[in-house]
Amino acid sequence: MITRVQSTCGCTATEYTRTGIEPGDTASVTLTYNPANRPGSFKKDVYVYTNGTPRRSRLTISGKVIGAEVTVDEKYPVRAGNLRLEVENVPMGEMYRGATRNAYINTYNASRDTLVVTVDGNLPHVSLNAAPDTVAPGEASAIVVHYDTRQAPLWGLNVDTLLVMSEPLHNSSTAISGIARVYVMAQVLEDMRKVTPEQRLKGPELKVNAEKVIYENMHRGTVATQAITLANKGKGVLNVRRLWCPDKAVTIGRVPERIKRGKEAKVEISVDPSRLEGDVLNTTLTVITDDPYTPQVTVRLVGMVAKGN
Image (cartoon, rainbow, N blue to C red; front, side, top):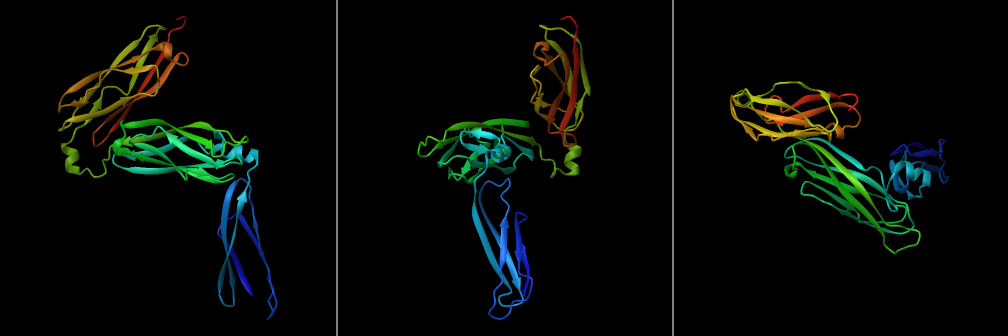
């Protein structure tokens, strides 16, 4: 008796003879692979269990799915010539300074020629590696993204642009070369997990004088400037890692690297209304320090451009 047939994935369906198999007789096991939205090579195992010897046997099916254009466009929308990428944005998430992490970009060769894949723009803290660097026609592959926070230039959000390039190996008339931009993002944070309670008590403490800064009656062509005060209320020296704002209309003045115990420093925050998208300012300023209690503080920046200007 075939007692059961077990597939290793939901893409492979099975049918098998469910009646007893007499001595000298035969039975059948039918395996059906569903290729929908799965362009590229595949290899799947199926296990057949019986009441005989051996109790378990393994069947393997393999093949290559040639992706339809609609499927390829949907699953791999980013183009580097005939090399198609699943995504162009790679969010690495929050990472403590000192940590490393890998991510993967799935790719597909949508041509009938082998493609040679290269990368450009690798940096000390982020790099791309094509694995492998040649992709056969109709094959899926991957690009490995490696991130090392020890080399990251900024605290908080880091955004880097790298290039993926593909070139036909045989200069086929049906294959084209191309370049795609890949954007890698990571939030690099201070690792406070190993700070002891005693160290916290003896450490710095940041106090910002405002949770919201209001820019009233801004005028086009005139830069509006306000200041925030960073005060150290703790017992240790406060190291200011970074102040940053995602809005291109906002410019941050000189930022002190250190603030001694009991001291404070002012930082000017300027807004150029001509660079706003619309007439409303509504963004955030992030203050990053080595305060063991609150290493990141967010200050809201709001305002309105006066009408008629």
